[in-house]
Image (cartoon, rainbow, N blue to C red):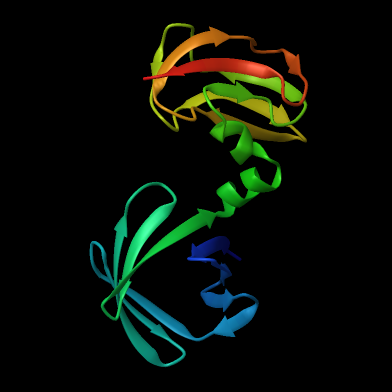
Length: 168
């Protein structure tokens, strides 16, 4: 049994989407659908018997420009991993300034960067084990690591400063 969960935001409206064993549910309601990729960025979508040509262009990791019936719309999509990070407050921990803080108490398992190293936005910086799960903490922006305040094996508290990055 395979299940994929997504949350899509279009304007001020949010949709919870679940694909489970080939079945689609949107906000809990089952939807008959067929989906075929015609070529990169172009999809043939049939939902509830209605054919909908769709063009999709990724603008960043979470945002798509979607054109349906000639109307272009920005859609923000979060997959199951992003939703889990959001649930545990990890997305906020990664988004703030040039500081990466522990989103919850845990154990630093690994560090991927050193002081003086240049990092790209969304680059993995460290792995924190919390609540029996391994969570990769990522760079909030491109920059230079100015300080590392933790080492593998360190127990850390919620909101403890782990890494400082100066944006470039």
